[in-house]
Length: 74
Image (cartoon, rainbow, N blue to C red):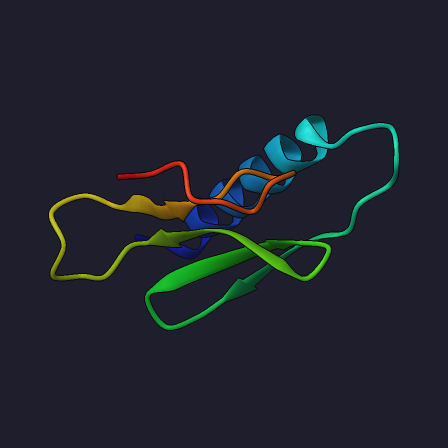
């Protein structure tokens, strides 16, 4: 996965996180790791976008509810 694709994914994640937020302002951050991007909302884990070279497809896991913080993935 090239750098431009990673940046586009991070921007998409941040945009989705911002649109899910209630009226109160929340801080959405994304941290690029070796083979994943970790997204947090107000310091709480929201999701990780995993894209290791040995994986067939990139995926999000886990995906946590922005308000409850509970996992919505199985």
